[in-house]
Image (cartoon, rainbow, N blue to C red; front, top):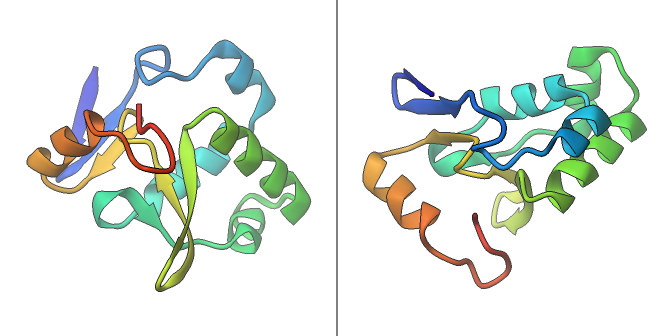
Length: 116
């Protein structure tokens, strides 16, 4: 089931979104929720690990470990942009942007990683 919030879509079915039970038991899901809440157009997020740690009252190394697990399972992607380091949320989990670009990204392969 997909919930539409303005132009933000959030997938509620973890299995459909590609989130295995193994990942769910290894991460703090609130970290992913904070990243999703901060995404800009086309799922890019410029947020520091320190900010996430502060918001959740946990250590920065704990956030770093969780982000590594999320990235290892292609739920988020680490990117270097002109603005600096960024995270991009996999469009199967959440999408902020127009429908046509979501469709294009969902079925395209990036040169560095497969989006889906």
